[in-house]
Image (cartoon, rainbow, N blue to C red):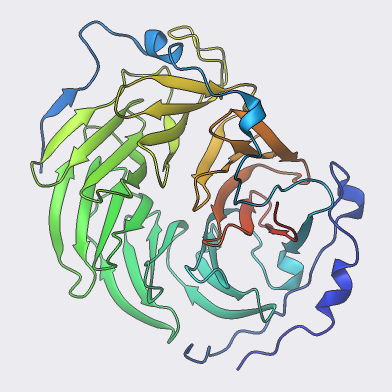
Length: 392
């Protein structure tokens, strides 16, 4: 049984100031690990782009809406100065000692899973302000995913293994070993019955969660770094990676459509808007892209229906490590090797706020399902949780 950290409210007497890391609030999580009580094939690739079309022609064609619409009917928090508080977990208070490559919120927004180079997974209870579980592995953790029903936690590692955990009971249910390269990304289907994995072996695999059986495998033609399911039609899966392009797989027909031309550099993160046919990603680069007019390390919003793209100006100064939408789709969160986190209005392209508290690269990030919190994992092993204290 875990013991909640007492006196934590005293750490929240001041809101998080903007751009002033010297006075950031930090919360110490208990370092107690214990038992958590149960809580009440190769496919053809087709192109959707017209013949001889280039990424450049599409990158210019879709302007974003006027910024004056930013606050109209907004459900998400504003995340503005005076409304955000910060919780920080470091190795000194039970966190990780090395880079945190994966973070994910449980669907109830109360629990959080983190993992990385330390080869372990830690479960945190934000309500009890405590660490409640530790799962150890033999390889670095690269990806994590909770099932939508909240029952399962899946982890993918550097050796190409996937583990499915009954995280509440601390039980390893399955170890899935069909991949031959690292597991870069994972996602459950909405009914929680299947798990989808993307790997460096260039395949996308579908797993039966109950039996652990590999029920389908698709050759994507590229080292997969990221995948995203269509929220409205989960049989459609977008993938991106070192092949420098975005593909869309239709499971029933086994057809794979190429949504974009090849970009000059790899795509490491991909997010599907929860309500629109829109994908967010970044064709990362450390130098100016010569083949397109897209500036380096810029976040791109791709309209899947017409193939048009728009960009978020001055996105980041280094590789974009992740992008993710809030559950409403009103806010886009991005993190980068430039040590910054940014919140965007994807409808208008407006930068809502940026946070400069991180001293090392930001590697991973996740929104809570209720949209009132987000978490990031950093290269120094720290975990930062940002909590909104006010709604618009």
